[in-house]
Image 1 (spheres, one colour):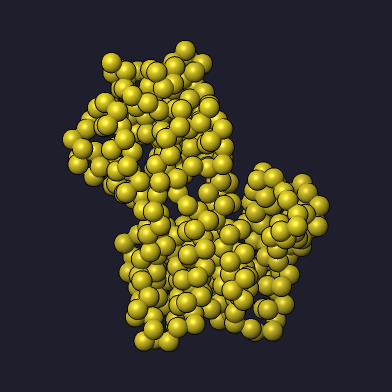
Image 2: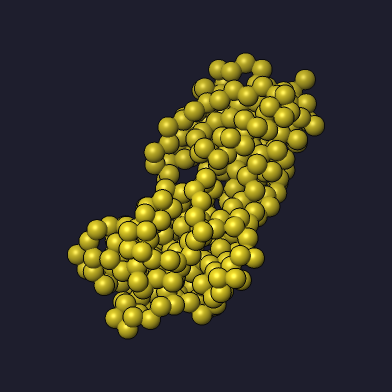
Length: 340
């Protein structure tokens, strides 16, 4: 089925002009994060891409960079995607959302199964997309650069990574907690394999006790609820003095659940999030967290993919296979010294 901008507007419950301005990132207009999230979610759900993608499809130009998304309502996605879109545009390229569905129509963006010829590069926001894209490239005998923003062990001459330095961020949390007398620490939520490995390594290095609370979190837009509902499990663990949460949304929910039960934060227990999303500074008088520089990550990915596209084979040998973006520990009011 072919979708138009009006369909996106209807799904996002905004006007068509609002959709156009958000997708084009027109700087003279300002929209709330929630409105932007709704628009980007509608774009991905419908597989829609802006009209210029269709015209480029017809004209067979090859300055199109695909941005591979998947349905996801996380704040991180909606901070990375617009920045990638804007940076690529400023560098003279045409960013489009690429589709992984078998169905094909020119109004729904670039379908990777049928139109790989039109792409000169791909940026992946999710790890599970990389293998799929590499398989399609091999099947179609295409040689185009790919930049992944998610860590993985996959290697290919055309695959490069731009990653937050998660291991260093996790170590900074453990350094801080150890300096403040914490020894028995809970990790809560589902952090994903790369961060799980980083946590295991950091706890071993510090010789600190880790208690894991695994939470099945299938819906990314319910992190607050998962965190709130985990308060009872946290309270059942005696003598734990701190909780490291999988992300800031989970941390806010957990703090809400603990506060309902009369637990004082940070006097009774410290809570630390991850990502430093916009609300973290103001929720609960400020959440201690690890800041991922999503804007820098997106900007670096856009510049790297363009460098790979424009470089000769010799020049590509000097481009880094992996770029790490530093993380920063932000200490606010949700954490402090361990209770004596």
